[in-house]
Image (cartoon, rainbow, N blue to C red):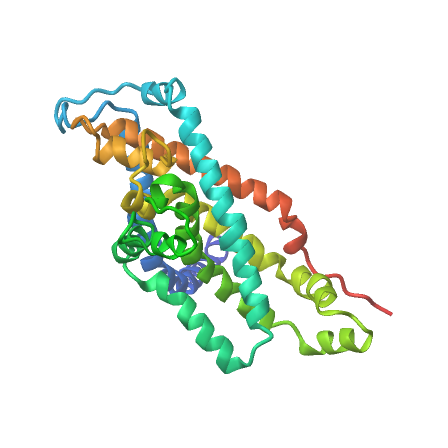
Length: 322
């Protein structure tokens, strides 16, 4: 009986080998990607949180810092500039996102969908040029464009109709900051929306035309309802991108003109952590600001999932059975 009871053991060992053999391929293919994500995304996030719990700065160096817990977060909460920087961030993200990265990109995609394939392709390639242009070159072009007479193009053109020229970027910094980031960011949404529109069956538009639907009714009843997924993706992705991007603001206004006029959250963290006016860069405080920015991004993403009814988008399709 003992020999008979011990017989199933080889089968169990064989089953384990089958499981390991079946898991070998997924591990082999997913392993490098998991390692890269852990090294390039997870590890920096953990390091940022750890640094945010210290008073690490240029003054303390890497050997004399102290663990101070959540003191940096308390300093952020009691900062006199918190409301101003947060307001600037909301204004910058909302205006750029709604007017350009989603709104204008959607308009461009719909308009180019009515062009010939060759003309639409040429237009999209040209609109992508600012995205592949180095940020420094693009920022300098806009600064010269808005410069005071006799250099600025805006001042030269408006001078022809008697409007006195001045530095338009200093006079209207938010208009130029939003427009610069928007014209660059709209190209991303335009490509995504154009691809989604191309996937809508042409028969639906032809049937709508036969029923007498106008161009606006076709857009409202056919195009937009089928773009919920792309709009959700572009909105969430561009929100996170805008929350963390500050290079164009840094290169054009550097948070000014004046004191914190166009200072957004990510630029505020950069100035405190890496480019402090007083020379004592505060790595711990900058890391705490970065950690809070991650929480703000996650909160915005959750709001988008609720607004766009993510549960309905991923629900199993209904199948009618006769």
